[in-house]
Image (cartoon, rainbow, N blue to C red):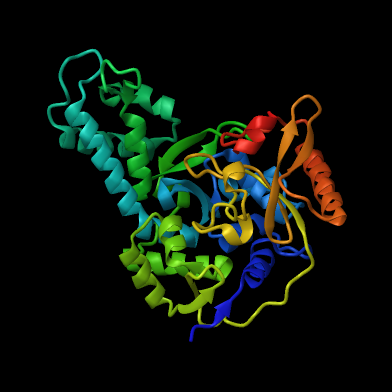
Length: 399
């Protein structure tokens, strides 16, 4: 019979490993947190900073900026599920090796389809040699970025011969001109050839320059095979998020069942029975129960790694999916108590205060603790305008 891991134990593990209790922190706290969490979601710039703050309130924006742009111990990379992550260097190598080729191939296929089917803007003809265009444009981009770091706009201005747009779905209300060079940059980024470098803006609205991966890291990116990369990512995920299902891992990685099953076998994962009736997986040295800690109040940003860490979320989300997640599966700002989502939160622009929005009744101590966290978050933000991009249905109503 499989060992059994109940929902209470899963929430205890989640709190212990994804929200470490207050106490001494290493000097490189943002780097350590990114390694533990298998990366910060970085689609919204503020998420990276607020995810770190939620776990270590002493982290300041400058700490993350230093790790990203001075030490370069953390790197922004298009990775799992074609999502932008902030990763440690070891996880960067694993993600590029495991997921990069898959994302890059998808980006290339999409570009070829548009270049073949759609006329170049201002003409009636498509690009005559789409594969040749991708090859030549890639070579030009890499040569240009080897000499200097440039924003997307600067790069388009520097390479006007490759700055073309195609008319997608001409004559349709949902059609329009689609610039191809930015899509090529995503393709080259997924391959690990180029990377987002210095930020050109505040921590809350960062706009990055592009540079070559080698020049940014100061060395070649270590090569990881797809099998080795998958095994390293799955091992890291199970250590922090486990137990999880095969479906969780397939979704989180944006990979295939075949690759996930091979990786689970490579790390000697053990099957466990979950309260949901699903089969979960744990690392072989992680089968003992953990001691539950005291209940904690937390406020997490949109697209936080914990909120987005699983496909099957009932053990911490309960009945609140329709209030927290939008139609495309993006999780908004959340309020947590004792390892469960119990609501959301919102920043009031007129007062800069943070307000907790409960979705269920909670004990009085929980309400007081959540309100205290809201005050701490408001003080941490100060007068900085909070820029978000994926409000939950709940917070959208309250805006």
